[in-house]
Length: 541
Ligand code: AMP
Image 1 (cartoon, rainbow, N blue to C red):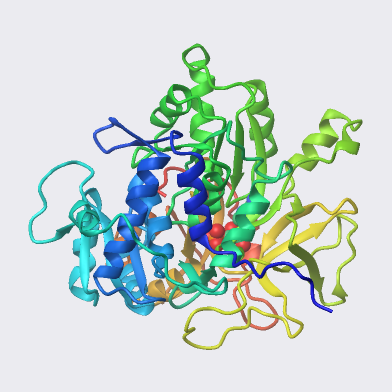
Image 2 (image 1 turned 135 degrees about the vertical axis):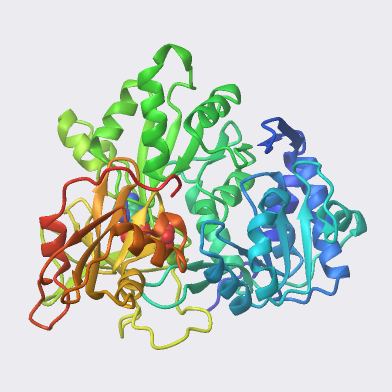
């Protein structure tokens, strides 16, 4: 027997229509490159997103065609978040922190037909322009400076029509895509569907998750090019929340000005951002008056318990979340249960510093050599997950992939425990990656590049703790007999291939590298030996 309920598709046009019809006067605020504030309403956003959709169709966009965005967090990017998918296109957010060669690879691999780029990011785009095959580039004129030789996003919108009809969309159709760093080799593409994003948004809005409502003012600091800004722009639009976007100004004082001036009630980003903010709050407590009880979702890297305690002193509530590009990204969210209210303050902080409970429609388990591990809060295993917005395959993978178990769980590459209350705690990771200020660095790629230097016999790169970026790369190098080479020369050698923030801050020269029984570099031993925090670090994550 089938249910007799309509087979109503879970697709994004519904969110856009709802937002336009019900929340027209609600404000959307964006900080522009010149620091001025751009203000408009959901009614404007609705009209312009539909114009974008219709203009893209007029340009010949077919269902499933990819449109790349190389943009900061602002109103035009929000229009792309909606306008591209409701036209039948696929929103492909491009990570502006990537090395140009990876960026060019991603654009070509995804076969982006069009790219919409901020004028302030043109210098970056120009580095890949000759290497990518895109049909047309549209420039978002954020600064108002004239752009020659390229089409304007505003002119594109003018070509759109107000009475645009949405194409027939299936809920399993692609809505967007995002590439994630691989341990080795090229980044891998994850394709989100309309259904997965709708369900993800609904669950994010739940009270024990992000708890979005019309009375919220929501500001995603997490970049819109990273895992859809954790889905926050979709969920906030569903809820009809007021939205604030920081544009390219991500320094602590600029963020605090916006949080205070716009009376933000919810914000989210990686720990590095909030550490900087905390320093400023501690240094000038009299200067800042944020909304008491402002919620801050922090994730992407482990959140230090001390940070949660420190923000509590300013009446700002930190919630930790764990997720991945492959999980859309919400996986777990850490909020103690009501019946835990009687626990001591220290016990409660202990729970809040864990990665948290799986979101509804997400399952987690940990698996080790003995099989599925006990949920005793102590037995570690590889974290595996499955659920309504977990990736089931990479997009056109190059080479073999072993990220799924035979029984259909996604292998995260994180190592974790799960306690009897169901709280996840990440303890380590098996993937050979370093997460610096929220963005990935591949240790294996750096090692291979270093070992291509004529003076280097062997090199291992490991993550070491850093007070600001949380992790930074340390290179442990064995030189060839009789060779001498300085750190500057090695970094100059690497700089030909990698972005500046990838370069190791520290080198250690040793006679030999410790190895495991199977002959691999014993990175745990290196991490332990050189764990003292590094000095300095890149200017930018
Ligand atoms: P990405 O796909 O770039 O968002 O990275 C996902 C990975 O970031 C996860 O597999 C973890 O290794 C790490 N990660 C994300 N959130 C957390 C967290 N709250 N604590 C520790 N690691 C995290």
